[in-house]
Amino acid sequence: MIIVVAGAAGPAGQAVVRRFTDKGHTVIGVDKSGADGALAVDLLDFDAVKKLAADVRAEHGRVDGLVHLVGGWRGSKTFAETKLEDWALLHDLLVRTLQHVTLAFEPLLTASGRGRFAIVSAKAAERPTQGNAAYGAAKAAAEAWTLAFADALQGTGATANILVVKALVHEAMRAADPEKTFPGFTDVDDLAAAVEGLWDTDANGTRTDLTQ
Image (cartoon, rainbow, N blue to C red):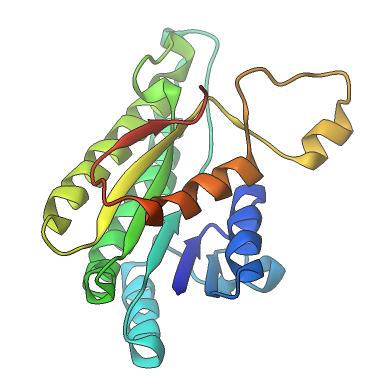
């Protein structure tokens, strides 16, 4: 399979890249930083994203999986202390990048016949706290966009789904704080397994809670 991972240099991205690479699939990692062998593409630059899609089409003709892992968090102690600059940042990271990759890669996902698209959302989207207003609103917007994308994919064999976490944890976090238990957190390797599991179902437009 041909798998594109957006946000490939972060811990979650590295876990997804590793899982699919270990299974022998072709993985195209994309990250603004260009770290860890990822292609250095600014996903806020729509022309650059469209060029990336055109390059992938020219080389592979299709995309079997697109995993959007571009993230970020900003918060405050109270609702009144919310900074609209944080909203602007989170809108760009969580929503605008998502819009660009889905619009550019839709034809490549449908060309696969069984293309799979996924985002990672957060419990904050369904029950935001006052200090998470900007973050929760951005995640909710990302979910709405993904569900609209799922509707567009109906009948194509491709799907778009949402994986929900409280937060993510990885080995470096555990090593830095060995006494902490991280209750309700989802390990990045478990997230990668859930992404792989999307090919075991034809469900489309679902919201799967990985905190259970």
